[in-house]
Amino acid sequence: MNSTLLVGSLLVIGLIGLIAYAIGVYNLLVRLSNNIDKAWSNIDVMLKQRHDELPKLVEVCNSYMVHERETLEAVIKARNAYGTGRTVNEKAQAENQIAGALGHLFAVAEQYPDLKANQQFMAIQQRISALESTIADRREFYNDSVNVYNIAIGQIPAVWVAQQTGYRSRPLLTVASSDRADPSLAFTNRTRAAA
Image 1 (cartoon, rainbow, N blue to C red):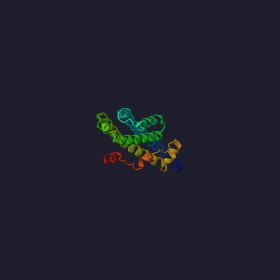
Image 2: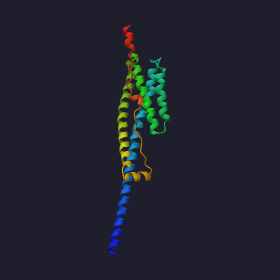
Image 3: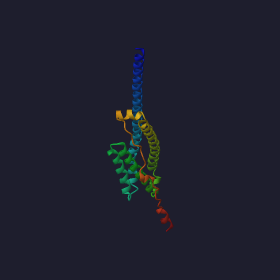
Image 4: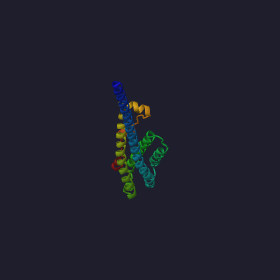
């Protein structure tokens, strides 16, 4: 009788321990998932601030860059693509387009000395550059959060809790393949100066 009571007690304690462990793992997954959502929200706030600067930038450039309509339209088109994005991946792809369009716009602006000297253009360019730096830091934090979460849901025995509760891996934010290529540097002004 004593041995039956001891075995029963051990089973109850083991079951309580298993339930407590599963609850602990679930709570960990909730915390990690919420950290990812918070990290993305922080990126989204900075992206909104940058998006608010883009119309100002295009307006300033518009009066100087008469022959660069395609460049200015690419910035606005990329900005609008972000608004139609539904998932983090779609928004990240739109952001990569915006970054590429802005890089091209700033490169083209180098050919317009009057534009480069415009105080409003310089202020907006500095603001966007500061925002880009902050966005890059927050993207890194987002990817760190996703990495910790993905590792947690992939490890045994947490993987079983994750599968039962519907937690799936999340994608990392990546750089567009076009951003990995070295930019071509065409010095058109140099040939004009030599002539």
